[in-house]
Amino acid sequence: MKDYNHIDEYIASFPKEIQQKLEKIRETIRLAAPEAVESISYGMPAYKAYGKPLAYFAAFSKHIGFYATPSGHNQFSEELSNYKQGKGSVQFPLNQPIPLDLISRMIKFRVEENRKKAVISKK
Image (cartoon, rainbow, N blue to C red; front, side, top):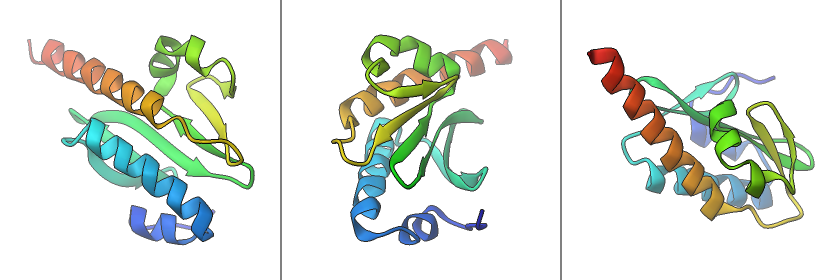
């Protein structure tokens, strides 16, 4: 796995068609969580809110992996049931439209979850 320093560098390493899908996911996350901090973690684009992981995504040969932690996936299990999944992960096939609305709702759920944990930890 190549080491990337920035999400722009990560996205640029893929063919144009995949770059467009990755940029749409990035834009969706930024709109749903404007306060989130972008970085590269585990070799892929990563987002944190309230100092805690929010979500990650990564491109593969046939899919884009999206990782919103087990709680984020459990909350949307019915909507994710049409996709191949693991614990805290889902695969969106490259030959299908990326469910950006679902990603947005998952991110908003995770932001609120992180916010609540941050408030509790301050008490």
